[in-house]
Length: 349
Image 1 (tube, rainbow, N blue to C red):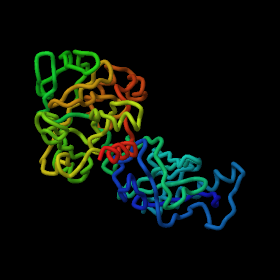
Image 2: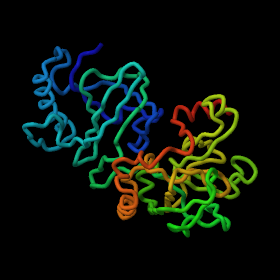
Image 3: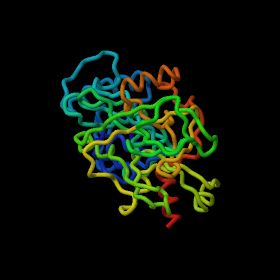
């Protein structure tokens, strides 16, 4: 067991699902996480013995706060009762390797946007694989005051959604309209949200670029035309591989985990994109360009990624949904984690 203390590392020292210094929006429950390099101890020398007295721990953390601020290059703000830097985002990542867990505090510089991770107690083992079991990074803000974008679960303008009267463009659908669902027939749209993402924004945040699924990528007329969805939008995947691995023949997999550099790719050529969300009375499987996709579920979306007016309307429609989105109800199918999706893809080859 290593020396206990308060340590900081750079965000660039971490890997998320094998990507070094990945964007914050890439962090999800089930993502793999590791770090390498050296950690800086900010509550004392690296060889100091840990203090087990609670008052001693508090004192060390108060000493650590201004040091973390100086590392970031921010002005030190003195707060007598603070045990976190004034630059702390208030957001955490909790990781585990199955034997022990670690809670990581995310710290962002006000001036530069530089990210540090602060860990109290013993350090996670460098070069060792962990998995994210919980996080609240959707609440973190950038230096310009805007929320980090992630968790955009939606279709793009031009997508044809199956309805009782035939396919209709998703941008023409409104609350009160009916769409066809796989399990429960026609269902009413309770809420429709939309957000335009500019090309400049996608250049800065490439994780926001949609995934392009070419016609017939999954077989004849599946889809029946090129489909563009947000990277986190889940598609229904079925077959013996899913049954053998997960004891269910149908699972939901994020589009970004289906990339194959041929028929399913990132749409890097778009100048802008409009993402559109459809909320039904429950989470459902519906048809988009002829293939089964999920409807909007607030528990898998970042409210910071919604237009402010849309978020307000959604909160008025379902009170408390922003604070407790899981209360919306269960998922229509099992959602695969990144590691599970990788196993499914490998087993299906």
